[in-house]
Image 1 (cartoon, rainbow, N blue to C red):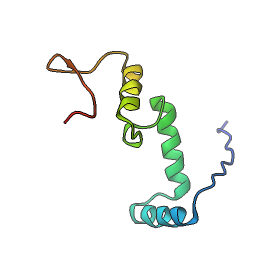
Image 2 (cartoon, rainbow, N blue to C red):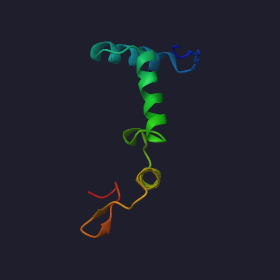
Image 3 (cartoon, rainbow, N blue to C red):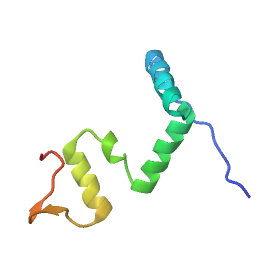
Image 4 (cartoon, helix red, strand yellow):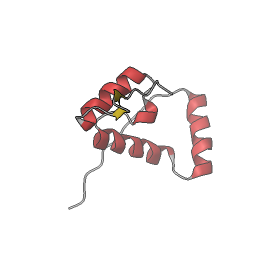
Length: 83
């Protein structure tokens, strides 16, 4: 048996919606497909995908939970706000 779908209603600024639709039209997916892709990644990755997280500390906390081990560079903890 196939999975059931449900409707998701999202309120966004009209200009943002129009700009997103125009941008997505040039690369392929519809807005609904883009939302579905993002929600799938949220579930699979246990949070916002790294590029959507703007706070480096939040990303570092997410990655520590996600990978359950510290990332290191030359023996030092890795932080995304470092060059």
